[in-house]
Length: 439
Image (cartoon, rainbow, N blue to C red):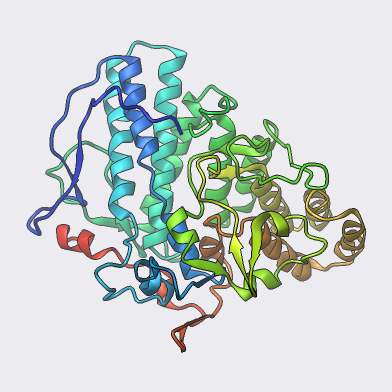
């Protein structure tokens, strides 16, 4: 992602260190007010650049990885791996609650100030629309990290996260309900739809929101809410702009690269370098693939003795928040939930044709056409596991579906996340709770 160092325009975000503060977890300690479109664009670029790499940490909690017991970075991730959230070792990497609010702070500046100061133009609309979309994405990640999965029956009473829409450090930041947060997320995406006017962003600037990226975000939001028709419709709107899939038979390349034809929003790194050296692919993840017929396997994994290293992530050219693959699998899943099993099968087949050898596809085509709804659902979930391995989607998929039991073994001991374990919801980080007693 392009980094803007020319402007120090707004503030330096600092982590609050006194427990008497009622702040979320951050304190701006100085600011220079931006005035021009370029200056406000630089502010939002800082917001994009500040987007944290929390999805790497969620992968440690899933069934995708095992720890490398000889890694020097082991201690940073061990307590995440064994779901020791209540009293982790002080060196344990913290989920980036405060950094997501830092992103929100930048977007609030654009939404609340740029809208008043800048003259009307398409560029202004695009800028403010992106800010709404980025704020929606940050709140979506916050509520799916630190609150229970969305349940229409309980969302009104389930504790969510604090809502900060203004630049006001004197307000008390009290957690709102999951329903309130989702309503705000959808309100922000609705505002973004009115303003964003670029269908796509050029390569190199595709870390910024476009119409295709916004529709992809909406499709994911509604999928998690189990609003199947809305998720389906949003996926179709995104696919009307970009429906390209890389045919791995012809082009064996990672679809997670920001230069990929599948790229829609190239903002996040799914597996950061420090973590790549501290983990191997789990036996469960490796077993999910056919090593000989699934063309993703040699792209994603590299044998290291009897285990496998991860080849995805950890490079500047691998940035991926949304890509067309997700849209196909979301469309298939929502079609099935809407009782359109024939359309679901057609969509699945159009996707997997690009991921398996020709001979394997022929067999899969026969198998899929014979599947009932339950079998097809399981196949779609398995394809999501295979396609998005260590991209940060697995934890959220498990939360919204089975919340299955997971067993991690470390230093000869077994640690179990039981089915429907409360630890499928991550508790607020200790520093956040210290700095905000309302949490």
